[in-house]
Image (cartoon, rainbow, N blue to C red):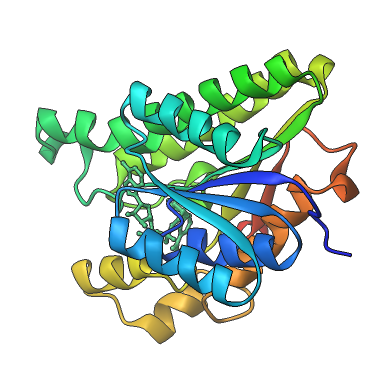
Length: 254
Ligand SMILES: NC(=O)c1ccc[n+]([C@@H]2O[C@H](COP(=O)([O-])OP(=O)(O)OC[C@H]3O[C@@H](n4cnc5c(N)ncnc54)[C@H](O)[C@@H]3O)[C@@H](O)[C@H]2O)c1
């Protein structure tokens, strides 16, 4: 018996990194997984790898910053598997790299369009579908330790990730009476393509940076974050809503 047996789950940003690990863990635990991403070759690769190991998965190309594509993503899940029970809003853009005074005005839309508006569009269309079905559901919005505590020189990412937590709490308030639970995960530093790109961009030394960002002295494996996400999406977390689970190796306890 898997923790998500028979559940239909959308995972945005499932073509690599944490989204890929989440899609694979969910499929291993019995979910029918819809992978949504702008990266078609990555999304198809992950979908095929899941199918080759006996899991159920389908890919849809969707840019989360566009409302009609997000609606199309939800419609695709329902057309493919009959309903929508679970969603993980995970896709995001690499953090910005300048304090407020140095950013270009266009940088604001570029990051917020995906990390904030995009995830809110996902939440909107997933909630509409789950409410229509009348059977409840579970949604996890991926925030960050940057949604709890600021990091230097990425004010847009920090603001967007705080916003994700606000969206999670207010959605939980409005939709808990309908049996839909909405929670957030705040990952610490996770060894994904996004983190590797950021380390290179900011010229950070991985070993000392990992110690600085975790009591456990290392980066997380993406699967360790996916385990927390899976628990929140499963019936094991049936009395948990409106919460932020920090899966951060103790960073926010420091
Ligand atoms: N890696 C970390 O250390 C870390 C830490 C805290 C939080 N996070 C958060 O975890 C989530 C996953 O991060 P990751 O490290 O796996 O990132 P990643 O860059 O490795 O993967 C992100 C995925 O999102 C997709 N994507 C980007 N823009 C999109 C769009 N407009 N529409 C659809 N898909 C889009 C990309 O194609 C990619 O497949 C993000 O929300 C990120 O902010 C990451």
